[in-house]
Image (cartoon, rainbow, N blue to C red; front, side):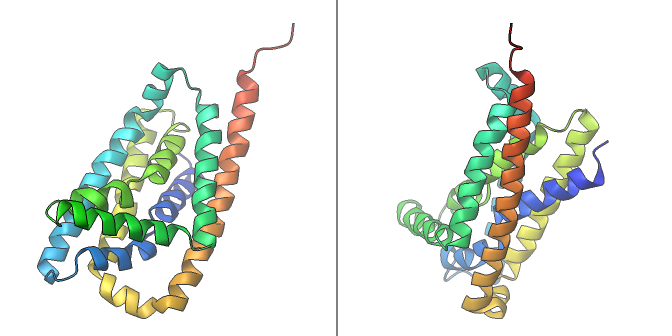
Amino acid sequence: MASADQLINAFTTLLVTIDPPGLAPIFLGLTVGMSRAQRKQVALRGTIIAFIILAVFALFGSSVLGVLGISIGAFRIAGGLLLFWIAFEMVFEKRQDRKEKTGTAAITVDHIQNIAVFPLAIPLISGPGAISATILISGSMQTAFELAQLIIVIAASLLLLFLALLIADRLDRFLGVTGRAILTRLLGVILAALATQFVVDGIKSAMNLAPSPV
């Protein structure tokens, strides 16, 4: 059974990586002209697809790494560095610009027909950062029950995201430009600390796996 600290860290990492406050205004831009019911349908479908993607990586991500000959220690270091870069973008307002460009490009190509799949589910919700975080967290889960707990944590994180998308218009008005910038930076600092911990754990794991000197 996973400890409370493990579950809290997993929930915090996923929630910060998914970034509901940052996605809310982008979701509004992607669904401009849609009714409240249509927005709800897009948000629900996108969230469910993202959950399936992250759940699959939580269950089989470590196995795929094993087949490729990549140790979990090495992936923790690489994933931690990736999460740290995302945190850097959040603190210095780079991530929001990139997400907005991704969303705008997708509207042009897909004509909004499959907006729940792309770009909402992929890559805005279950992007490289969220997938990396999921595999990193699942690597520390040893039993099937612990993996089931992780699936529940993923579901809880995406449920909060879904609720944030439902009230995206009110959330965006409430936070405003200044509030959104402050919250994004704060979440970025938290993610940077968690990413650093992933790298430290990865280095420790890699050193333990290193062959002993003759």
